[in-house]
Structure formats: structure tokens, C-alpha cells
Image (cartoon, rainbow, N blue to C red):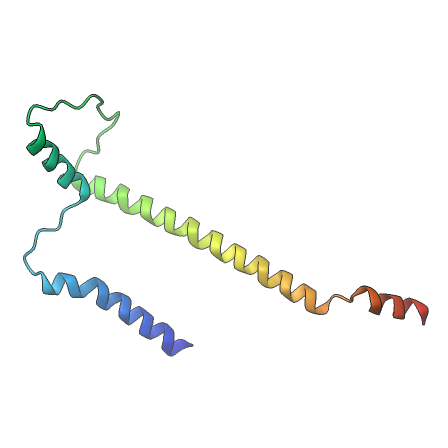
Length: 110
């Protein structure tokens, strides 16, 4: 089990690092920048009809908030899945030790 986990971790690291190594010097951007660029090409005079209520003071703060949001979401999903698995395991363990009705009737007769 431990070896399998180590292989999975190695595979994840490899999948994250391989594109960066293969595309050295490439510019990695987000979908927001691409969408803004496409809108600028399609309709050069476009004025957004809505402005954001608050804009982060810098790109680093924006990235930090995005990473924090992703971490909270991943934590919530992990907690939910772990809670469900623990609940199911506890339920299955309870079934194996709890006496059934026939056993209880046989016990009451004695």
C-alpha cells in the first residue's frame, strides 16, 4: 500500500513538472486573460456593464485568494468524502456485530 501511494505521488509530481519542463519559456496564463483578449479582438470598443465591487490590490493577492479558495474547496470535498466513508465503514462494522432477530429470539428462549 505504501509503495502504491509513493508511486501515485511520484506520478502526480511528474504530471505537474513535465509540462513545465517540456514548454520551457512558455507563457502560462489564465482563462480570464484569454477571454479578455478575445473580447478585445471581437469588439474593440466593448465597455463592461458591471464593475467589480472590490479589486485586489495586486496580482499576488489575487493569486493568494484564488489559491485559498481552491484549498478550502479541496478541504471541503476531502472532508465530505472522508466523512461519508467513515460513516459507511461504521455502518458496515455495526452490521457484522449486531445480533439479528433469529439470534435474539433464540437467546430469549434460553
